[in-house]
Length: 64
Image (cartoon, rainbow, N blue to C red; front, side, top):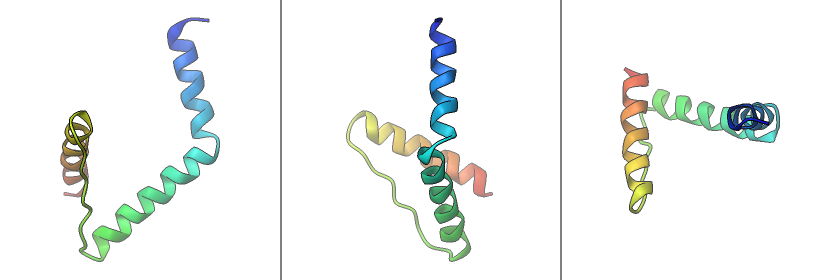
């Protein structure tokens, strides 16, 4: 099995299971937070801080 086939098979499996339900719940909470004009605070340490920063920029772009 090639790397890419295995990679995409794993993504498809995750999206078709409980993980997808958790993700959709998170999206719903983000939308509700925006409607209520509340804050989402993201943080991390080291690489996780960079990922949190990147996600916050993506959310800002998506919400404007």
